[in-house]
Picture 1 (cartoon, rainbow, N blue to C red):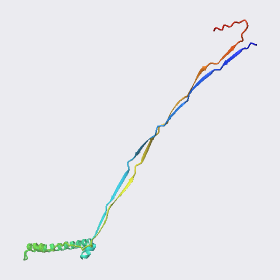
Picture 2 (cartoon, rainbow, N blue to C red):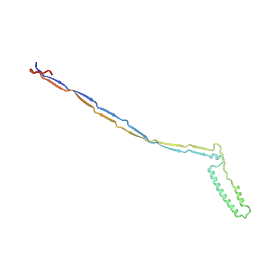
Picture 3 (cartoon, rainbow, N blue to C red):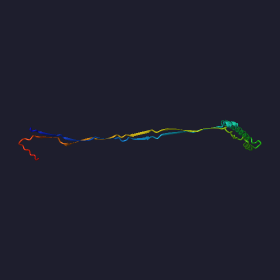
Length: 192
């Protein structure tokens, strides 16, 4: 038999443990602040109108309208004024000639009692001869709504990242064992 060298080889065994990377992303909700300005309201009131037409009632009674009556009374007052001035002038002449017969003071007093009397027209209109027209007032309302102001508060996303790890462990080292052939005359102690 030919002596042979024996070679035993043992490969290394490596253990790997991996921790994957961890991502965390959180995005807080945005906050929206909403503010509305006060609206503007304008109210304008237009008053109603009332018209009373009595011209037909005056015509039925044979009376003048208020405008014609005013003109007539102004002319009458002016005439009474002129007549009064003439009468006063005549009474002045009488007082100046007091030597004449009669009692001028008693005549003056009698004039005030028998003078022209003022009159007030009485009007009882017939039904439906006075026309009344009423138009109610109205209100105009204008509303201008207030502006809406949006004030958003946006939050940035929060990102956290942990790197992954790889841990390597040596389970078995690599080794090469060479066993030479036994040589004659060499004693090997096999007690070990």
